[in-house]
Length: 275
Image 1: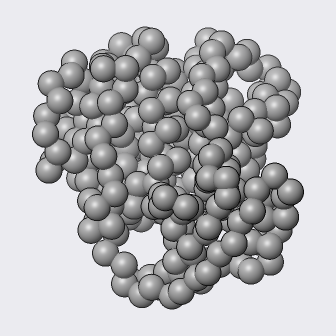
Image 2: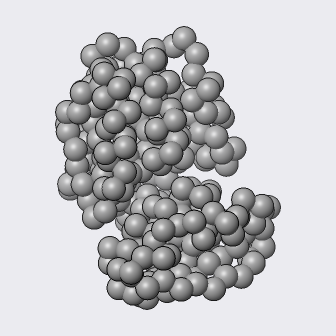
């Protein structure tokens, strides 16, 4: 099991800077967060941490917010235990419940039961909410779907619940692949799940591509997504803070994508585009 570093960031004022800091930490490899009353706890694998990258985060030098931090090494974190302590069910528009098996059934029209192998950070709550909110109004019936950077595969599972045909889920992380297989079985849906990146996309085309990742990966991979997206197909993006939108749309415009709908929740944004 990987050794992790735990960073305790004290943030004043807390809002909206805690969400913005989490977005920037994700960019440099932090993968898990816990909200505290005066800041956040943030976790990164020891081997992935770069002091230079951390000091390069402009928010740490901002005049608008005061941020200080301490850190310690935490070997062998039990992520399931950490997650269970901090994860609440997600209720999207009183239509979709995303919960763990130990949570009570909310009796909503759609229910997705997941058990991640990694901590489920607050930012993921907001972006997952936005993706599901967008998907509620989309037509998935018999569509071919790709969930890129699938994580728990909650989006792929919801696509299948909405009538999607062949649905492919891909993630770079081995834990996510295994977790996706477990979650697909847990929700009685059939997914084609594999480990990889956008570089692994071949000649197969899709009607809908879902990508809840982060700004840098999206900017790099949007041209690849477009190359395997059918004409008239839809690309749904999140993992973005409000200040990322212009850069993302610049790439999308260059790829001749049309923005159909933008949703924002807290500091996070989701974009629905069409080819």
